[in-house]
Length: 637
Image 1 (tube, rainbow, N blue to C red):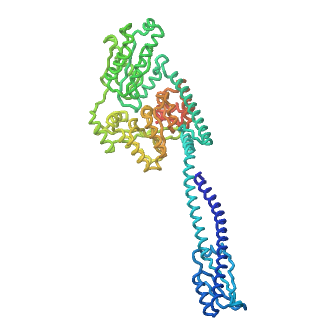
Image 2 (image 1 turned 60 degrees about the vertical axis):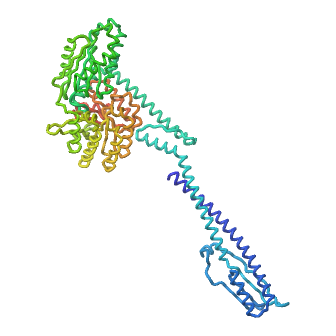
Image 3 (image 1 turned 30 degrees about the vertical axis):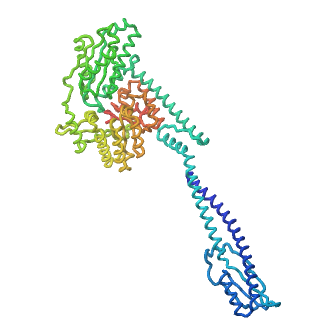
């Protein structure tokens, strides 16, 4: 029973007891007072009537008329005149029913008043005795009305006390409600703190809850920092902080074979000239500083380009993969301009011939070895052009492009005309015995071209044209239709640009409210870069979806691991770890240790961990040992 209900029960009980006691005392006191008043009235009226009859003639008519007049005017129960011999000379009695109060009330509280008596004289002789009793119904009426008035006041007082008490309880227990909400948030894997109330008892509870949340956050932050340090140690170059060769090539393979980005992109390679001479002339520390500054410029080049990553692939050779820049010339010009503006002026005084830069394009499923061979040839041509020059190779890398307005028409017609579809891929458990869920990946049927484009081929253009919201809403509708026909769960991906659209979030919630039975089977995931780019919007979206029973996760997790302390307030259901950590896991002991710690930390928060980009079923037992709950990729499809 809630505190409010308990309060009302207590008020009702207390007021009932108070009313009962007060009613008994009040009614008995009033009855005693009325009995006294009626007794006095009976005596006074009997004496007055006897005196009046004593002074009149004693003929029967006169006596009867006098008694009748007194009876009609005085509200009597009876008036009786009896002779000394006991014979009744005149008698008048009230023969009506009790009025002004219910009969049960009169039976419950009887009024007992003795009749008034007086002697009637006839000269020196006694003529008779008069007896009269006033009618009690007026006393009962007064007593009944007083009781009702008392009851009304008690009811009004009870209601006022209840309302005031309810308001007071709500004010007093509001901090308790915040603590309850905090407890629910912890159960949902959202770690929040609340303000401490003034009430000492509630303050102690709130402080204990906040301390627990603080300790959990501290543990989470400490473990995150440890894993981030381990990740950098395993996957980063110790001098520049960029991705090391193994991790960069793993990331490059994912871009070449995955569907997160378009089927075309560029690879830029920067090669330092005469690295040994640089070390000899500058010394170890100054040479490391040169490399750090170069690495920082290359790292910053990807700030506005999702998926763009720089790595150190050899001693003096650095590479940048640009999945969102299809033109090698544009990629080369951008990075060359950054180097000439932010890095070269600090060092070219002592080294006029410092670097060469080359860029080549790639297409989906192209081999890494072939791509690196082409970029080596391009570097030779860049070196031939002179110091600090660049060269880009464009041929054979582009698909026919469409103008923006043609894309707008194509995408709009696709949403309205049913040209969008979902391709489903299984996400299996660690032992591959049964699927965890299916991942629905969007496809676009090109009109008259007979080909189906993946999301990476058209979603960047959709983002430029502000068309991601209707496309994502169409994807959700396709997933709902699929769920209505088959068993199991389905996960769909939402664009980073879409989650910031408040109108889309409203339409999505309205759509899902029509299918409450399907919401527990529907999973929503957002790429990691989109989560941190639109963090507040993602948090609001996650809360809305989880309130409907849907599950929420992050895809391609691990690229921005240093910011994972923000995830403690989201209540995530699952994460899908980036393929660059999973590829070649059987031979990468460092990543094994990192992923084992990541899984342990996620499980402590109740988060399911899924591996992306699994290349072989032979890796599943190892991934299960590391703590992964599920896996997906070309090796398990």
